[in-house]
Image (tube, rainbow, N blue to C red; front, side):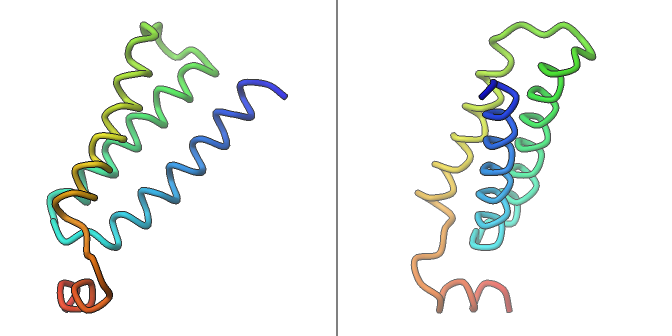
Amino acid sequence: FSWKGINLIFIIFSLVAVNKSTKKTTNKIIKPIFWLSWIFLFFVILNEEVKFIELPELVSYISALNLAGVHIYNLNFCGCKDEICCNRERN
């Protein structure tokens, strides 16, 4: 089992998490931030595999921490606590 497999699993897992989070968030600004953070992380991991450009290892840590930070912020300040909230916000 190689790092490529772990990277692929991580990208899929993070894609599912971002998709679910954007559906449940009540903050409209967080939605594009989630997707931009995920695209940045995807690009960094893809770049590690094919080496488009030379990036320091710190960039991959920053991109992962950025996405995790957006998730934590969303959980604490923007998420729905029940279905009534989520349905009210969508309408």
